[in-house]
Image (cartoon, rainbow, N blue to C red):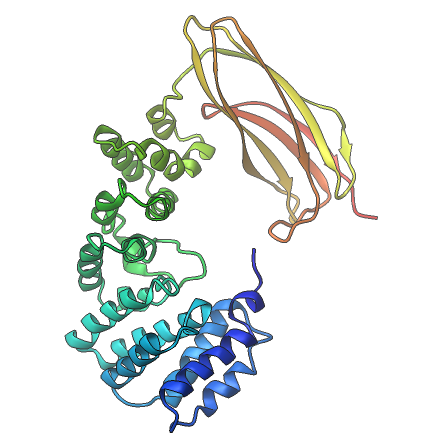
Length: 368
């Protein structure tokens, strides 16, 4: 994962100052210059907010005045691109909501669509969604017909319930079916860039509304394009890891008759930063081919002494009647920034078509 300095650091902030100054040579930008020099202790979204507020302070006035400036910069500077766009789109949305007119709202949505090819406007649109969800969704519905894949993607990505780095939109969480029409319009899109967003949006919805997601995916598979199975698989990935039977059956991983031996661990304890090796044997004892979605769960020890499981994909296979499948895996406990390990009791468990087998414990030793 990139660091904030790599995305919205001093270079990007100074480029923002230059592009605005070139468009408005007679206007001083003290707040923006000060903000550009004050980013280092802040996280990414905090940096965007700081630069947004500075831009609004240096460019007072109504929405139309800000929009004219932004469009002048947009059409006049090749340097006006990349992550410096985020605070600009955020300022546009903030000023439009503050003005609170239909004209400013509609124009700001259009301006975000104009800017999104330079850097996605998905974060800024959240302010407008929070202000007037029905109006924003109606305009996003028009975006699904755009010839520009960046704009079509914005309709899906900007309305995701759990968009990373973005503020939540409570009304979206309270109305889970509000964005289904957007996804219905885009799941067979020609652009993989757009389809990946649709799948990620569907996956977001699955966190709270698995039945809605399975029902939607079933409709898509009943009227598919050539890429629809891949979109559905990616959109159901969290439900598959959770062992959701509706999602598993939709993808062809129904009930099967298995004899499972293992997982058997090669070690009973693991050094901090080391790895655990395990193997297992899965035999199809049924009379028909068995399509298997095979995952494994590592039950991590937490700081409070309790265990919590995290599911990892292992493989998908079709096993003939009477045939066996040998499984082997090495799981690393190497330190990574997205996970913190605690010494103590851990366990490994298989999950096949949503059914768990053979939870086996081991110890993770303390560091040092």
